[in-house]
Image (tube, rainbow, N blue to C red; front, side, top):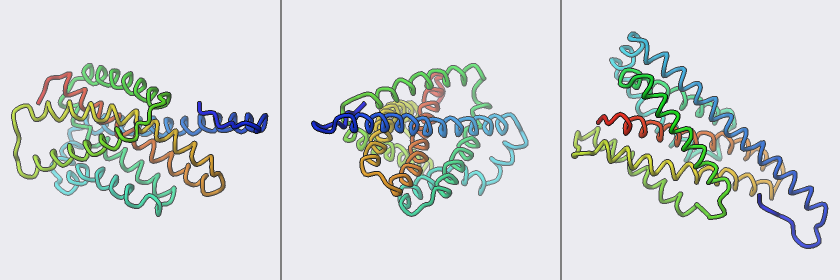
Length: 247
């Protein structure tokens, strides 16, 4: 854990550092707690829809609803990225839970494409990988900022490639395999990067303190949870398709 003490600060600095450490643990627990609850919501919705022929038919034969499920998460992320400072905590919570619900609906098809054994194996592998990568991001002394910026550009590039493929109908041999491998590598790296960013944002906000810092951290916890959630879901999807060997 970072040591903020400087010569001459003595016991007061030690108390301050202990307070920061305790606050950081609480902040990280809040982030992981929100992410975990979102995962539960997503899993419940995905299973409920994916095992209901009526629900599946309603979604995939209703073009406006299908488009909302396909493009809604992307729209929510764009709103969050460009309007974070203006959005209230309530609005951010709304975006967070709407994203989890839409993702649950989009993931419902996996219950038609894969058996439960394949899904649970992929989920287990993803969970272990996520925990390890997040631990790396939390403990490493190396600044992951430059790597994170590069990976974020890579993620947007994959989104653009997927959209172009869907709109214009082009593809190349092994395209699905390439996209899944690239997504797995990108979001594995982003898991570590986001974890470090969440930690650093907390430490920086605590350095300044005050009501504005408290409000910022309240909002940052939601955004941090969503960032890690997106990475987990992307890794899970890629691992599931790679394990199954399906195009």
